[in-house]
Image (cartoon, rainbow, N blue to C red; front, side, top):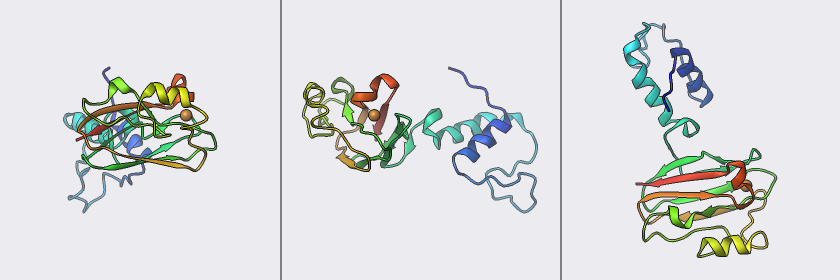
Length: 170
Ligand SMILES: [Cu+2]
């Protein structure tokens, strides 16, 4: 999917991710990444890439070890990247129950299966839910990722609402 970004879009998205954007026309900011005060089209691709790297909702993964589970039925950020050996914390920041359940066929070869409730297979996790494996409001779940590769996981009650996530272990 190709995505066109105008300069204004980029600035708006930067603002939305909480990064302070100072006026690009300001003198004395030559060390800033946005020091180019002209409307150079040549730099747009670079800027778009940088923006995506800090915004998991729009492309690349976010480098963080904490994932929220939201009222809007999603994992936030939806896509993260962590170094191998990282313990990732999933926090239910909403008022409703969720699960963190790995797709058994979408984790790296040799990786340990993970799911809230401590199940060792996806089928067991599905069968056991919601008596076991439901993460109540305010509860957290942790898993340590010891094998490099890409992991995909979902929330059992909200998979059909698009509540899925990806973890890249590098
Ligand atoms: Cu959910």
